[in-house]
Amino acid sequence: MITFNHFNFNVLDLEKSLKFYKEALGLFPVREKTAADGSFRLVYLGDGKTDFTLELTYLTDRTEPYNLGECEFHLAFHTDEYEECYKKHKEMGVICFENPGMGIYFISDPDGYWLEIVPAK
Image 1 (cartoon, rainbow, N blue to C red):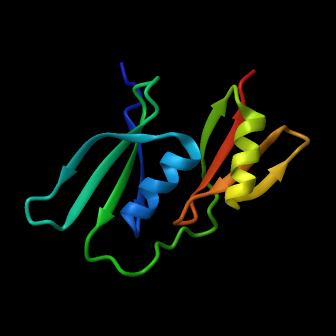
Image 2 (image 1 turned 120 degrees about the vertical axis):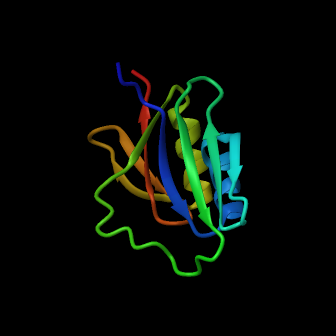
């Protein structure tokens, strides 16, 4: 049997990303790993309700933003507090695309990764 474990985003500024994910989505570190030589740091974020984690990979010598291509991928979240989340994300200025017809919207993290917000059904 195969089950989901985690999903990865490489980030340029780990502290900025940690702040964003906490403020925007309520995610917090659940485990970490730092390379013995200090070349990278992995921080796994959780929601406190599921076992799924988002791995933020920080390469300490990276100085250039990541090339996300056409950004034709995203990570989706569902919430039973859709209106409250929408208001908070609007105030944060992180909404990058809205699709009112489908009842969803997307926010963008500090590195340009798109995160879909879906109302719980």
